Image (tube, rainbow, N blue to C red):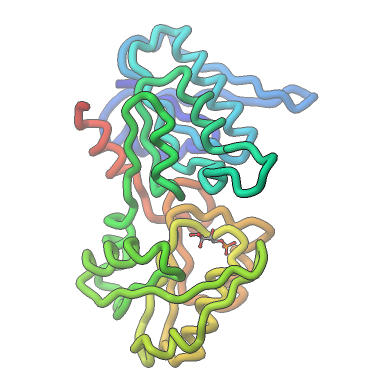
Length: 289
Ligand code: R5P
């Protein structure tokens, strides 16, 4: 097996190859003066099992992924596995208004033209993966998050909304602490309301709370959740998400709000992506299917 690291996932791809004990090659990706992507995999050949690790977000990384798929095929790859740590467009999983595209399906139709199996991690809508005609699996980061926070005094794990309650249950059960969810209403792209009445029913007074979510984008969800929990008497509020997008300086917004800890997995590499998913990807790659 040979791991090819795309430019979005250099550290993760390298860690993955170290964990598996297999060869690693970093794609050399640059941009032409007009912004077009140029990439090259500088190695003799790539015969056998090739694993490309690359996000499909932002769009520039999606283009790089397409080019890498073609390059590895041309270099002799017999089986191409895509590891897409953060799958962009997964939230655009259906036509919400007439005239819109089915964006997630469009991306998958194109990615699926040159691959034999696909792994994603905590994709926002798992069902979109069924558009792949090849074997595919979404890996869950709950174990890595629970492992990271075990022994750090967390009393309760909560998700910021009903949709993520299974994630909170998974992390909470692994840590052996109670779990639950908050009642969230989205007001706009950046603002949400967390029901203070419902928070009042959760026994969070004096507790160290861990909020878990699949992603932090603008940070609006986490800011509102933290305010509601603090208002209800929580002692501390830590935050862990799988994908830290942190758009529009969201990380500064969050830490400026004095959150006790904001951490994410290394599906998107940034200054707080300290929870590694390399081990679980390695385990999945080792399994033959
Ligand atoms: C929503 O369904 C997701 O699980 C996240 O809660 C959401 O995308 C976070 O977005 P933001 O950080 O912009 O509130």
